[in-house]
Image 1 (cartoon, one colour):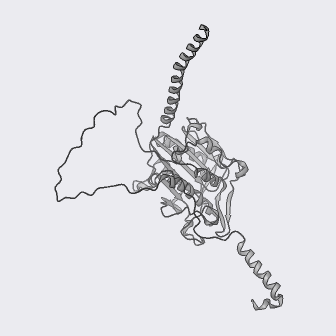
Image 2 (cartoon, rainbow, N blue to C red):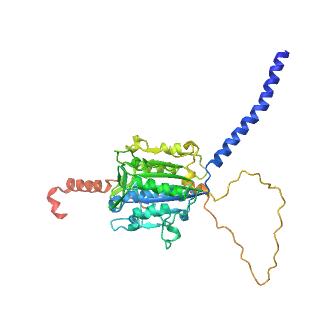
Image 3 (spheres, helix red, strand yellow):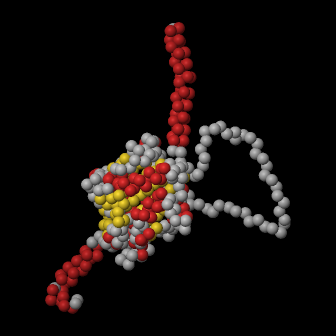
Length: 389
């Protein structure tokens, strides 16, 4: 009996010693994940490099990503938006001042609050590289600058037409993968980012990150070398494809992400497998210092308040000094300031596209005319056809 009592006492001692130790390790791992990022602010550079009406989908790609990062908290002041063409005001657009990313014109991603920083012929390789490296003229306004620092996490998204080792800008010039790699190295040397996420949706997109050599950089592409990045969702009412496959499924994934989401980069790598995209998406993580599984999606697509992180102990129980009372003359009225009512986060997270205008499904008009002609011929015969014309 004494033997069993001894075993029970030994087991109890183990529980008292190892359970607190295991819990402390769990707490330390969570704290380590919190402190591991080290960034205090987020920026996004979103670029559409294509002109002309038939490249409508590239503008819709960029505006869809713009809509998602704004929904997750990155303000316009921290977004540099570059659109090589103005599809909303194109004379071939049947719905002026709109750009749709879903069939049947369900979701207008142009909206009323889009702030385009570079448009039309301002979208050049030179201006893009100057934005990244900060080598802009002194006259350049603040809204056209990437004012990041060594605590900034930056999302860079590019879409357009490309090939093996290059991306075309407006069918008139190209940026090579080596030029892009050197620009990122300049950013690192000048302490313009903490971590950088590069996403490109173009043909042979993986060739654009092959030459990268700067630290803390992660890259994703919609296709491998030798593969095309395919379009998605043709719309007969507009007459063009509305989006590319990879960006469409990327945005479908981001719609389920909210500011407190625990989704990580490994989840993002699974977006649009070959069975959906036809092309083979790729990613590169060897330059990134953290495990992608510990990197939250909101580390790049969301926004973090600018704070200084410290591990020092701070005493929060010290008495708070009473505010200094100031005499105010009776004839001066001070207007009380309050915060405006905010849209509840739940509504922002779960908002879904609303169909504003009814749009006939594909082939509806053609089928209707066919039915009318069949009824006419069956009723009157072909001899009365002349009365129609």
